[in-house]
Length: 580
Image 1 (cartoon, rainbow, N blue to C red):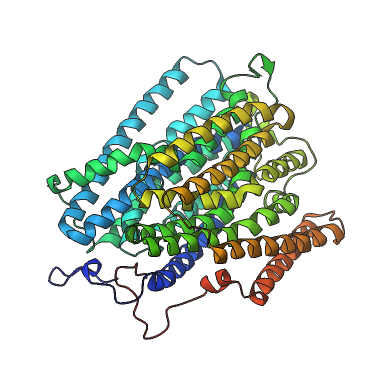
Image 2 (image 1 turned 30 degrees about the vertical axis):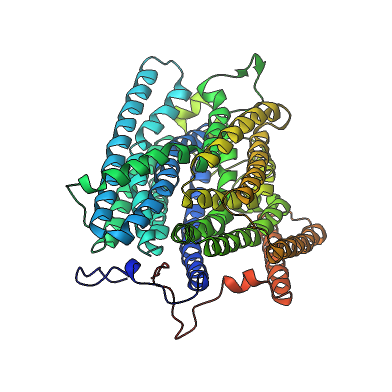
C-alpha cells in the first residue's frame, strides 16, 4: 500500500462499488492466506526455538522456570496488546479513520502513549515486588525462577506496543508485517541458544542469555512495525482530538480484557498451579500435591504444540475477519455473511486439527521433543537446587517418562482446538457490534469453571488435568457464546447452508480421523526416533490427502475460499481491506 497522499481522498471515504460481502469474501481469503503463511513461518521458527530450549534446559526445574518467566510478558502481550486493547481499539480506530485521518492519528498516538506508560509502571511495580521476595527468600529454586522472570519482564511493554502497532497496520490493510514480527523474536532466541551450546555455557546461565536475547528482539519488533507505518500514521503530540474516541476505547478495554483473554487467563492460572511445587511447596489444600518441578515445562511445551494450528489458522481467521466485521457492523446482511464465513472457515480448519492432534499426540511429542532423551532418568539439569550451581550438561532434553506425560497433556488440550478458534471469532463479532459486556460475563464464568476443574482434575490426572480443564471450559464457552450470538447480534446465523456446511465438515473430519487412526494402528510399532518420525509423517500425509481430497470431491466451499482470488477486472469494494 502506498503512503497516503493528503491531496487525495482516503480510500475509506470512497463509496463501495460492488455488492455487499463480495469483495469482503476475497479480502478475507487473502488475509487468511497472508496471515497463515507468515504465521506458519513464525510458528516453525517458534517450534525450532522450543525444540532447542527444551533440549537445552530439560523438563525439570530450569525448563519450568524458563517457561514460567516467558509466560508473564506473553500474558500481557495477549491481553494488553494483540488481545483486549487491540479488540477494543480497532473498531473505534476504523470508524474514526473513515471520517477524519488526523483524528485517527491522534487516537493511535493516545493509545500508544497510554499503553507505554501503563505497562512501564506495571513492570516497575512487579520488578520491585519480585526483588523484595527474592531478598527475603531462602528457597534457591524459587529464587532462580523469579530472577529469570525479572530479566524477561521488560519484554512486556515492548511486545504490547508491537501488538497494538500491529493492530494499526491491520486496519491499514498490512497484515504481513505484524504476522512476521514474531520471527525476529524466535530467531534471536535460537541464535542465543545455539551460541550457548557452542560456547559450552551452563544450562542455568543459558536461560538468562536466551531471556535477555528475547528482550532485545522485542525492541527490534517495535522498529520493524514503526517502519511499516511510516507514511500511514503521523504520531501526534496534540491528542485532544482523540479524547472522546479514546474514552470509548478505554471504556471497552476492561470488559474485553476478560472476554477475549479467557484462554490466556486460564493458561496463566495453569502456570501458577503447575509451578506450585517450586513457588509454594509440595502440599496443596492440606494434601501432597500430585505435581512436580517438571509439570510446568511439560504443560507449557504441550501448549505450544496445540497452539501451532490455532495460531497459524484459527487466530488467522479471527484476525482477518475482525476488520470486515467492524466495517459491516451497520449492515446486517454483510455482517451475517462475514460472520458465517469466519465461523465456517474456523470449524473447517479447527475440527480436523483437534482430531488429528489427539490421534498422533504420542508420535508428535516424541518426534518434536524426543531423540535426545535416554531412558527415564532425569537429566543433570533437573535435579533441583544442586543442579542450579552445577548444571553443565547440554542437549539432554526430556526423559521418556516425561514425554509420555507430555503426550497425556496434549491429549487434554487437543479436543478443543476448534472451540478455541470459534471463540475468537464469536468474541470479535460482539466487539464489532460494540458489545463488550456479554463476552466478559461469559468469560468470568468460564474462568471460575476452569479454576474449579483444575483443582478437581489435577489429583487423578496430574498436569494433564489442567489441560482437560482448559479444553472443557473452552467448549462450554463456545456453546454459550454461540447461543447468545444467535439471539442477540446475529439472528438467523445458522441457515440451511451453514448447517449443511457444519455437518459436512464433521463428516470429513471423522473420515480423516479414521484414516489417520488406521495408519497409527497398522504401522509397525517404532523402536527408534526415525521410526516414530516416519509414522508421524505418514499420518500427516494420509490425513491431509484424505481431508483435502474429500473436500474437493464434495465441493466444500471452505476449501475453495482459502484459495480464491479476486478475478481480474472485478471491482473490489474500496471500503474492504486491501493487502500487500
